[in-house]
Length: 274
Image 1: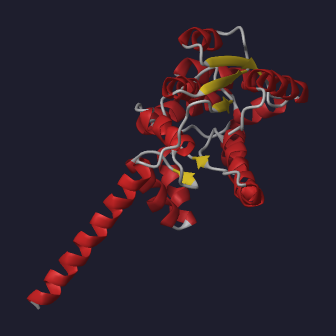
Image 2: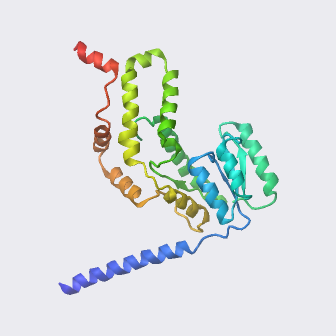
Image 3: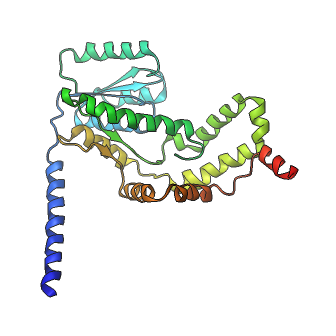
């Protein structure tokens, strides 16, 4: 019996030692960044802004794609380092993309280029990106091009800023047709917005964004990067456990978080009519 226990302990120690060895090996397999360039979109603020700064300090020549080249974020990046080149780009506009490509080519010249309530549209785009990346990774493998996804959860960035959140949703509400406003009602909209902030953003949003920045840095600088990064130990565990739950339990969890939201006006009227 004792021999069996000692054997299990020995196997566990060997396994942990192997994991540590692999981790150390990966840490020491960073690529040489001298002379390498990277293009980052969404650098006006948030993760794009911070990773542009961090990669420039590592020696990368950073092309920081900004929606507003005259905005505060672009100006701050331009003054941060000579290695950072703010670039005007709206990725939905083909001409902006072509102009950005021309800008990069002129500078680089001949160098080798290296589902929550209230977030329906945002989540849809992210799910789309993951699916696109899955296909693109396999398509580009024969060209020796790596496609890596970084999948952070809720973090305290500009997208979760209270003033930004209220302003964006207020703008969307004002643009809604009257029939939709009448169906939901102003009380529902205001209450829903408050509950989104209090029950989801304030409770779950992580203030430490360095884990995401470090994951992006690792994906860019590591010779053998992971295919998928879910930054943060807590986020990884929560994501794994949540994905293992039955769909009905997942839905129940979200419902419990949002249960104190007022019912839409139309639903309330229907209930009274019954």
